[in-house]
Length: 392
Length: 183
Image: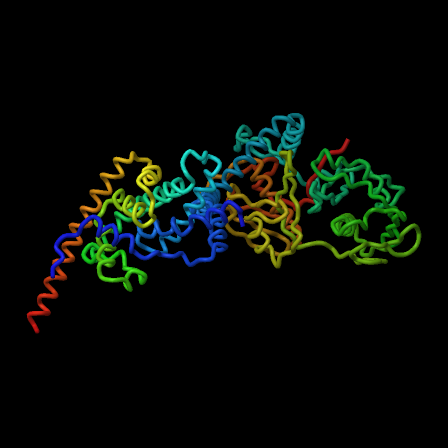
C-alpha cells in the first residue's frame, strides 16, 4: 500500500506533469507596460527635486522672517554711512551751511553751552523761508527713473518780474537736470503753457507723445496738476491741441479741461533713486485722514520704492496740535543721533505737518539740541517746498 | 510593436513565464518579472553575439531577474518588517497554491510544495531541466555552469524532493490508516 520510495524517474515524470502556467495577458499590453517602464525615472527623483526646492525656499524665507527688525536697522545704518559719505564729498556745500548756521546762531545770540563740536554737519533738503532771499521757489514734479512716482524738486530762481509766474515757471524748466538727479528727463514739456486769469491753457502740438500709454498719460496729467497746485492758486487747466480745443489721450479720451484742487493730507516718504545716495522726500499718492495716521504710515515702507521716513533714530513719543501749531514730544530717555537719517525724519515730519495745515512746530524733550542745521529748542516754521536742488 | 519583441514573444514568452512562475511561485510577480526580462533584453540586445543560443540567453536573463527580485525582497525594508511583523513569522503562507495546481492530483500538489525546500540553484535546474525541457548542455549554458555542476545540482535537488515527498507520503499513510481503523 505505502509507496515508500520515490525513484528519480518517478520524480522526473511528476515534474514533467506539472501544469503549464500561462500568461494570459495580451502581448500588446505587455509591450506597452515595458515601454512605460523603460521611460520611468527612479521613483525618488521627483520627490527629491520637490524636497530640494522646498529646502531652498525655506532657507530663502526663514532669515527674512526672523530678522525683520534687524533688517530695517541695517538699512538705517546704511543710510547713515551713505549720508556721511555724501557729506565728505560735497565738502563746500556743508561748510556753506555751517557758515550759515554760525551766522544764525550769532544773530540770535545763543550761548556756547552746546558745544559746536558735537554737531556733525547734515544737510537739510527742503526750502525754508530764510532761503527765499536767493530767489523764488519753483517746485517741479518729475517722474522717477521707473516712471512710477512723481518726485517734487524745488529750485530757487530769480524771476523776471515783467513776466507772469507761469512764463517764469516754463522758462525755468530748462534749468532742471533731471538725469543728474536720478530722475527721468521730462522737462521742458512739449507744450505751450499760457495763463488766463485763473486758468492755465495747455496747448500741445499735433504729434505730442503724451497720449502713448497709460503711464505717460497719467504722468502728464498728474504732473501738470501738481505743478500748478504747488506753484499757484490756479484751479483750472484747459487743453488745446494745436489751437483746437481738447487733447486726445488714449485712456481718458478727449479732455478739454480739468479742475486743479489744492493738494494736501499726504505723508512724506523717503525715495532714493538707484545709484544715488541722496534721498528725496516724496509725498504719498494716497491721502490720510489725520496727521496721526500719516505719522503712523511713515514708520513703514510703502509701495513703489517709498521707504519709511520716520526712523527709530528719531524717537517721536507723542504730539499735540494747537491751532496751527504742532508740538512734538520726544522720548528723552533714548539716544538720538545727529545724523542724516534723523534730519530726513524731522523734515518728513515738517513737510507732512504742512500737508495738514500746520504752520509751526515745537519740539519738546529733544535729547539733542541741534539736529543738523536745525535748532530743536526753537519753534520751527514748516518748509516752503520739499527737495531743494541747486541749479547752475 | 517592436519586431524584436514580437519575435521573442512568439518563441519564448510562455517558456520564460513558466520558468519565472515556478521560481517565484506568484503569478503577479512573475508577470512583473517577465516584463523586466524584456527590458533587460532590449537594453543588451546589441550585446548578444550569438555565442549561446537565444533561448539559453533569455533563460539566463530570466534567472538573474528572479535572483534580483529575491534580493530586493530581502532588502532592508523586508528585514525591518520581518522584525516587527511577528504574525508572518509564525504563520508562513507566502505562496498560496494557484488554481492551476490545486486542480491537479495530490502528488503534483506535494511536489509543488516540496520545491520550496530546494535552494534557488537547485530549483533553477529542476525547472529548466524538467519543466522547460532543456538538455543538460542547454541548462549549463543558461546558468553559466559546467555540465557536471548541472548534473550534481540536479541530483541533489531530486534528493531533497524525494526526502520531502516521503514526508508527505507518511502523513498520507497515517491519515489513510486512521480512516481504515475508524471503519
